[in-house]
Image 1 (tube, rainbow, N blue to C red):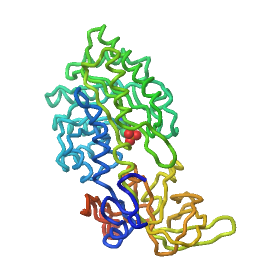
Image 2 (tube, rainbow, N blue to C red):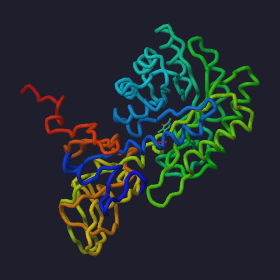
Image 3 (spheres, rainbow, N blue to C red):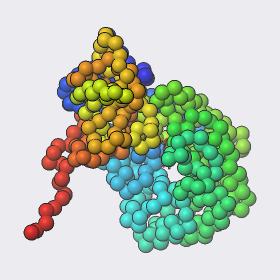
Length: 419
Ligand SMILES: *Cc1c(COP(=O)(O)O)cnc(C)c1O
């Protein structure tokens, strides 16, 4: 448990607000975020960046609620986006588009044009066809697009294969052997300005070693380019730092960021700007999913605790077999029983936790911890379930930052046949 989700007289609270109060006011399932936790994680990166040109680009796909973006924008964060829709969210949250970097392998012409019209800081480009498309779009609208190449350093991030992105077999980045010729191609295009280099090797990474390995390869490229007269302004080291869901021990944020900045400086690149693109490590432990126990269903081989949240609300367990700690909000004195915590969705994959010892009764509240990253944003309307409400707590204030979807929201935009 973080300092922001804690027990007050035995009952789980976030900052100064008991979770039971939030459930009573807003119902369940509800995502609950702590502003202080968001701020503290951001400040941990900012502390390492102090005194040199280094910035945080929040990878907002991890949690793109407008209020969450607003918190980071006010702290001075830039944003790493992967779609035109995310850029519109940054604008709606009051973020500065000139601090936005546009990543992703499949940018459309319309998205490029939108980003250029808002003068984004740059594009992380992943292929020659994408360079050609961006050059053409920039030419058409009379702008020069600032580009970094996302290179694939071919290092093993030692994480789940679905969230590993820096190996040869992944779809991401320019293959290491093609990097130099791709930079030459970019430098030759009239409507592009080559400004940086980027890599992102995966997610939920709990060791520094793969980062240093990737960074060394990135710096090798920076040096080779400099010898050809292509002088890069910035080095983007990507995101991916892991958090503690269970018993993982990732490096602490400030120490991690400092280690990378020191390596950059040791190799003689201290004058270049460094960008970090964290997502999960800024928001993951700042959120929990609050849910109510509907039924207990004892079984021969398993006992099931059926709750009102499901895989459509939190997909990570079904998708990655991810572990989330699950806690009773107000513990009972009874002896614990081992349950699989499951939702009402018609899929055997619909589980939130397996083999958890809990003393619970129907009507009790559970908190699915560490759900601030890749939680709400991956939720769906499967089984025609409305998506959860989102609440942000700031000290003793509770702010509803997204309404629970209502039944009439669920088929808005659908049409019956004429006959
Ligand atoms: C997803 C992503 C990130 C953030 O990853 P986390 O594991 O959430 O830190 C950073 N950069 C890019 C390009 C991404 O796609």
